Each structure stands twice: as C-alpha cells, then as structure tokens.
Length: 351
Image (cartoon, rainbow, N blue to C red; front, side, top):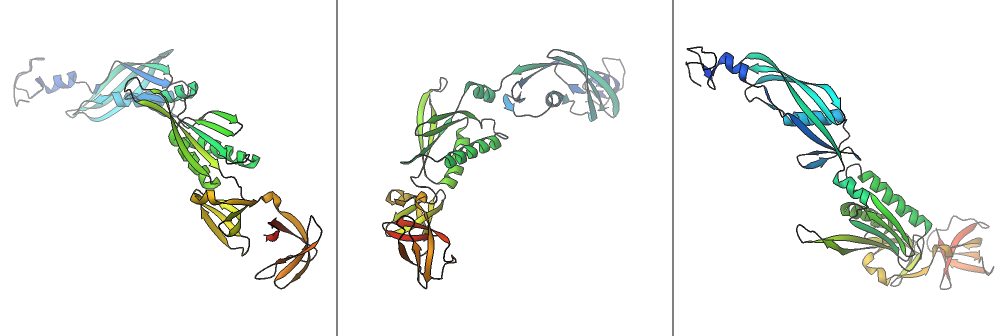
C-alpha cells in the first residue's frame, strides 16, 4: 500500500491505494466471500451419515442442517472483512439439485457492503462402508458359546442371548459396526457373528464376568489385502462355560462346597461343613470334581432336634437319620421341611 498515488481504475489522483486501487474502487472490487460454484454432498441412504473430508460422519441431522455445515466449511470470508453476516435461501429444488442464494453483509475498510452469490448443491445418495458391510453380512468376530461336558440350560442360553443382544444394541448408538450378522445354532452351542471385533471382545468380557468359564481366541486367515499383501483375519472367541452351574456341589482338595457364583477370576462356594464362604481360582478348574448337582437337593422332614444334631426322615428310605450341626440351632421347627443333599452317604443341610 502506497501513501499517495494514481488509481488505474477510476483515474483518481493523490489517493491512498489498496492492492493498487483507491479505497472506493477496492471496496467495489473485493469479494466478501470466496465460495465455490457447486458443492457435491454424499449422504448414506441407510443411516443418514455424510461424507466430509473423505470420512463418513454419523448424523441425525436434517438434510438442510447437513447442507449448512458444508456451506460453512466451504465459504471463506475475506481476511480483513469485519462483522460478516450470512444468510442462505433456497431458490429452487430439482430432484437432487438445490440452487442456493447466499446473501452476505460486512465491512471492508469500515465501509458497509452487501453482496449475493449463487451456489448449486448436488445431493448424491450413496451407501457408507459400514452399511455396505452390514448389508453384505460382513463380520470381524464370532462369539462361540459352549459348555464343558454338559448341555447348556435354557436359563443360561436366554441370559447369554439377552446380554449379547442388549449390549449390541446399546453399543450401536456410538458404533455402527455393533450388529449381529447372523446367529447359528449348533449341537455344541451357539455362534454369534459380530460386525466389530472390539464389540465382540467387550461383550465376551461382560459374559465372562457374570457366567465364569474360560475364554480362548482363535484367528483364522480369510484372505489377503490386495493393496498391502497382508493377511486378513477374523477372530473366533470361544466362551466355554464350566461343567457345573450355580447350586452344584464341588470338591477341591479336601473341601466340599456348593457353588454360589462366579466372576472372570474365581468360583465362589459355601463350605458344606462350616457354611463359611470361600473361593477357588479358575486356574484350578481341572482339579475341581462335581460331587452332586443342584437337582440332587431333597426335601426332608425334621423329626427331632437336640443341641449339636438334628434328626430327619430320609425322603427316599423313610428312615430316621441324624445330622451333626455345629454352632447354633437351626430355625426349622419339628414337622417342617428342610433342604438336604446326600454326598457319599453323608447328609448335609442346605441353607
């Protein structure tokens, strides 16, 4: 900028120049906005996500809001302009083409100016990669639900199914790869095909913590990436539930107890002799022996009780039998029933 000179546009002399023009001519020539003549917007027909800077963005926005975001990102105000106000107006819609009028007001060199621009917006309907994968049955992991030497109970299967479906739905609010591609029922258990490996691992951790068991991952080579030559793997995650259930009876070393629960690290039991709780680590799973099932628990009538022992009528032999009871007296009254289990010829009271 020179202090005083000649304006080549209007011929004014002795003027301060701005980019070679006098103040008045410069303001007439400058554009408040740098704006393209056309915008192309890709929107997924399935989930309404839109493509921006090469990436697909999840969206619950209206079409008008998506267009406004594109306009804001593609309009550049003149660097020295001040107090810019922009309004959008739809002039015409033709199928996927929308003609916009953009009105801009602002100040250049403290002079208020108004300008109008036209831009054509073309909406292209497409399918994003996630929806394309979902439609094609794509999956990254398989959750395998198995049991060790027994058939899974209906209650266990329902709990597993509820946990998987509920968590898949919850996670899908923030991760569109959280979906079940298919469920396969086999004689040995169920297979859940999950869109995302990360989601599958998260769900297995939840199941493992509530149902116990043992988890094992097995990658399988499904092909090779043509661009990198690297192997493409899918992961089979097996959750093998134990051979026993809550309520069953186990022997570990010289101790006998009833299973009261699990988590992903321990099995929780109640000692049959003392009624005290204790736990066994899953690493000792192979050393556990099932000595009775919850279904073996019987109802017996209390016929007599004395300090230190009670007498019951055995529900199968109908013979009176005595059971030692260390500690305080039991609350059951004579003539009432109580739960017992017979293990190796010895009776135990079950709370």
